[in-house]
Image (cartoon, rainbow, N blue to C red):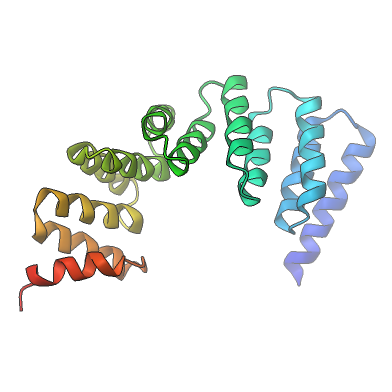
Length: 208
């Protein structure tokens, strides 16, 4: 209850700030993020458009518009807004990461790798981008590169379950089943839902 009341108070403050200074892009952006938090997505979109209209270089605004597109399954829209974000701020790692993620979902693996490498270049602690990069390399059959990207993810966050799962699959591709079992079991222990066919494939290699 307190959380909901705090959100409404914050929203009221941002509305007051906008009333006092309608051309403040940051206030429109802050209001939009708060509205997204209470799932008022339509109004949030209106405020984000106002934010980038007032402050065209506000890269975060484009990324949030991309997130709203992704929420309704509009991959092209998500891609377009994130491309606009990195155009406004070329070193914006989150924008590059999102572009890579969307390309991966659309099956554009080479494009995904380019964008995800940019994301990790601009933010060497971007764990999700390393995990997505590992997936992209695995989709191309680049097993060593996939292992390396997963290991980078685990250096940042040792208990990142997706990286353990991906690493397990990469080691299976290499035929290193002991390491595969180690990482698949770790992913499962961390709550990741490992694909049943992976578990079945590893059964013969487990010590009885």
